Length: 439
Image (cartoon, rainbow, N blue to C red; front, side, top):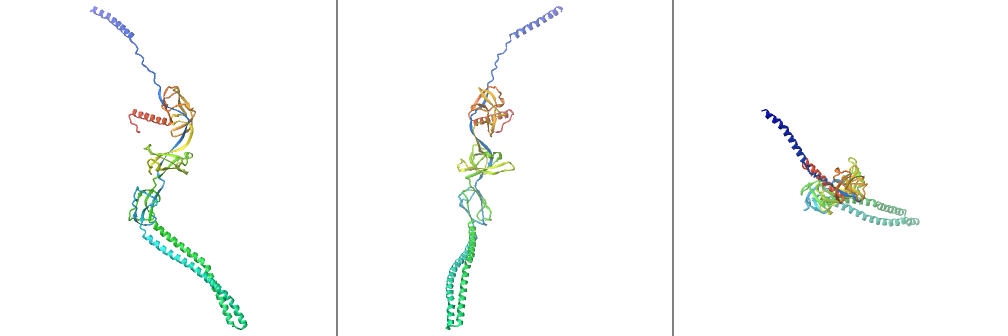
C-alpha cells in the first residue's frame, strides 16, 4: 500500500512537466495566417466640367385654361322657340353669323307694320308741306303784282276827282283795295316765313316714326339668334316650343382655337416677365404632353392680399399637336431673363457657399460667390472654365480624397443624374427601413 502511494506521488509531477513541454512545442510550431488586406478603391462620383454658357431663367407658375372668346347666347326679347338649327347641339362646330335659334316673330312683325304705317303718314304730310311751300311762294308773287297795281290806282283816281270826272267814293274804294292787297301779301309772306318751323316739326315727327320702325325691326331681328363668332357650342339650355324670357341664357359658345391661361406670379418676378415671353405649359401628371404659347398681357396692378400679379398666356391650338382644353389645370414655365456667358452648376452642388472640385482626381474644397439662384441652377463666380465640379456624394467627400469621375456633358444631364441618385438613395433608405418608397 505504501509503495503504491509513493509511485503515484512521483508520476504526477512527471506528467505535468511532459504536458507543459508538449504545449510549448505546439505553440512554437504555430504560424500566423497570410495578410489578404487590399487597398480601398476610389469613390465613384459624377462631375461636370464647367464652361461659360447662355442661360434663360424659367419662371414657374400654375393656372387654369379658359377660352379666349366665350359667350352666352341669350334671348333679347320674350317669345316662343319656333325653330332650332340642325347643328344646335353640344360640341357642334358653328360659323360666325350662322342662324341657331328662331323665335316666333309674328307679334313683332305686326308691331313693325303699324310703326311703318305711322311713318308713311308722317312722310306724306312732309311731302304736302313741301308742295304747300311752292303754292305759297306763287301766291306771294301774285299778291305782290296785285299790290303794285293797287298802289297806282289811288293816284289815278285822285287825278280824276280833281278833274271832276270821278267822285270821292271811287277814291275811297281804290284806297280800300290797296290796303286789302297789302294785307293779303303780308299774310302770304307770314305763311312762307312760318313754313320752315312747320317743316322742322314734321321732320322731327318723321324721325320719331323712323325710330319706332327701327325698334320694331330690331325686335323682329332679335327673334333670330346667330353665332357671334366661329366656335363650338358648349351647353344647350332650350328646346323647341319653350317660352323664353328676355335675357334668358339659351346656350354657351366658345372658341377652342385660342386659349388663355391666367397665371399668378409673385410680385418679385414682375420685372422678369414681359409681353411676348415664351411659355411652355404641361400637365402635372403628363410631363410629355406640352403646349407652347406666349405672354399676351400683364396685369397693371398687383394683388395686395397675396402680393402677386397676374399674367395671361395665350395658346394657339391650331399650332399644337393636341388641343389645350378649357378647364385644364396646367403647370407653366415662362422664359425670364437671359444670362450670357455665365458659369451655371446644379443648385444642389453648392453647399454653404462652396463646392468640391477635382484636380488630378483629388478632391479640393473651393469657395464660390453665388451670383443668382435659379430653380435648378446656381450661377456662381470663382470657378475657371474647364474646372471639374463634383455633383454627387458630396456628404462623403473631403479634401485630398481620391475619386473616380463620371463626367457629364451638360448641366441638364447633371441635374437629371442628381435626381436619379436621389431617387436611388431614397429607394435604398426605404428598403432598409422595411418599406416601399412611393414614386
